[in-house]
Image 1: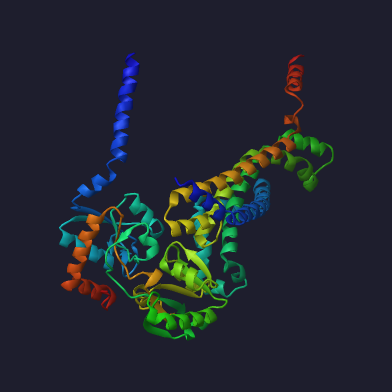
Image 2: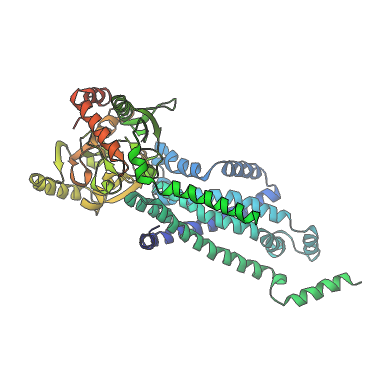
Length: 243
Length: 288
């Protein structure tokens, strides 16, 4: 291992970080919006959309992201109808193709996570809300969604980290993200070990930041888990036990 | 106490194993008589090397390798290896030689050693007929980057290319001499790098305007069915960082193997076998 070269490589990879972060952030945000819509369709069983969503989730969870990206980037470009349509303005660019693949992929996984979370909202809470006169969107916004979000967060945190790493596939459709630049440096120097170690370190650092953010969000959304010293919790437990 | 002896014994065995693995290196390589050789090719660069429908490898590189092994009386296995890792895997000892239309250029010669070239033709450009670049005529003379007498024509050619390439995008295979050429001689032109030859798909889709690759590869490509829309254009470059032609790469410490391959290549050149294989795959003689 040549540490000087490792350091130089590290500096050369830095310009790829914004691309990686941008792809990850945009795909997670857009993906989460779609996922929420899909999860609601599934939980409410809104037909025929329900069937469509089931099919979509099945296809996108059942095929590798790499294959999805190749089909969107190289596959769609084969059809003159698509090349002549307005969509080509976006599909022409590797960036939008990669983003589309990432969004559709994470939305499929995310919708299942959110569906599970929505289903796990205790029936009693909903009934209590209904008893207070809430219904429809108000009930969803005030009661179901906040509870579901708390339930979903640990699993969704996993999805965040998976997506950070999934953005590396964008390099295969010529984007210069961290992995894309790494591939170029390897092509020039024929020294894969140092380059991959440097690239891996960058992904590790990004994931670490993300883990901290998810943990922060978890503590904020679960007031019962927040500080007030462990003593208080023991007291609370005792109170419940004593008749 | 017994345990300590056992531990010491294990430690001694481990150390011996490590010493065996790390120390002999060079001495070991020199002892090799090279009666078995493992050869890697890409298997995705016809007519040099290609993978047939049944999964077996074929092409100019494969036929040449077999002819070489016959001459050297060596037993050879030829395997397919993706282009972007082909040199690191050679140096990691996964195989002993690369016969994959690899241009012997100075950058690569820093990490591997090359035999004498076995095919030469230079590099040129490809575009589709509906692109404005198709109006640039194809010039069938080789401009050598390292030849002083070509200096003027090189300057003229680059000046012209810089004008016609304004706003155009080149699709190139990563880790090829074509990418190096663009970095050094046409740095202002936007390029996109591909792992394999997917740039051809993007040329067909109109995402990139041109490809730069070996003349021998491209002239075969335009003859294929469904590729009637593609056309060669511009000047042809060779020499300098583009190398002296395609050669076989071996590890730098394997001098004996390189000399053996050199001798066998000379033989194939002299008795016309190389020309014969070349006629079969290219339809013209690529012997340097």
